[in-house]
Length: 199
View 1: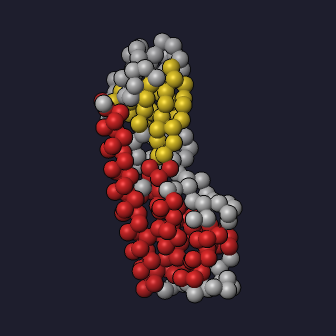
View 2: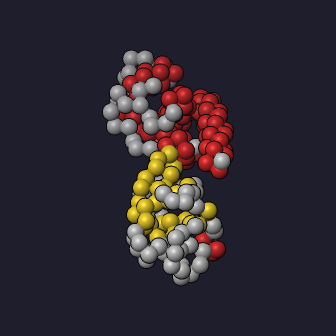
View 3: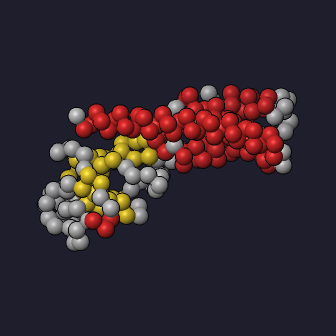
C-alpha cells in the first residue's frame, strides 16, 4: 500500500474525503511517526546485512547509525560462521590476539573477544530503523501485510491530535493488534532462521 493509498483510506476513516483537513505532508509525517513506532516494537521488519572490516590487531567495529539499540544483531565471520553473543562484562580485557569467537554490544559498537592478526571481514545482520517515506507514491519499508497497521496508527495519531480520545483509542488498538501479529510472526521467522543456521 503506497502513501497515496494510505492517505485516501485515512481520509475516509476520518471523514475527510474531500481532503480539506490535513495536507498530504501532514499525513506522511503521521505515517512516518507510526512507522518508527512500529519498527521499535517489531525491529526485524527492516533487517539488513552489512559487511564490515575488522582491522588487524583491533577488536571493535562501529554499528550503523540507524541500528536499533534495543536489539542484538547477529554477527558472522566468513569462516567459521556465526559468533556467540556474550554479555559485555564477559569479554576479556584487553582482548588477546586471535580469531574472534564471540562478541558483545557496547554502545554503538560491536566488540570482539579477540583481535585478529590480519584484517577480517565481518557480516552483521541487524535491525535497522526504516528510512522515512518522502514520496507519496512510495510505500513504508515494512512487510506489505503490515501497512494497514501503520495506516491505523497514523489515523489514531490524527484523532488524538484532534482531542478525539475515543476514536484515537479505537484505531490505536487496531494498530496495536497488527503490531502484535507482526511481532509474533517476526519471532517465529527468527527462530526458524536460527534453527536452520544451527543445522
